[in-house]
Image (cartoon, rainbow, N blue to C red):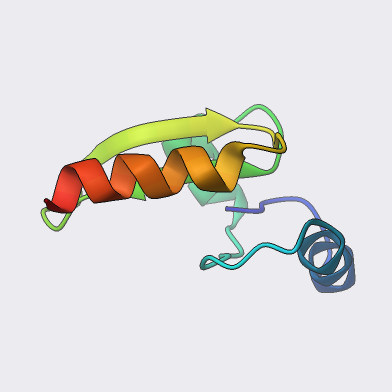
Length: 75
């Protein structure tokens, strides 16, 4: 969830880091609700709406880590 960047900044970031998962724009209310301090922030949310994992920032192994967490949750 991005809360302070422009659409153009986000598109560049997605392209540069080859992100292949959903990206959402949030508002200042979203930032308050999720208690974010910076971006990007990544959240795994289950079917009931419960946050099951959150990550602040990006790392080279983030996508692999999130995929493992998703697989563990749905299997």
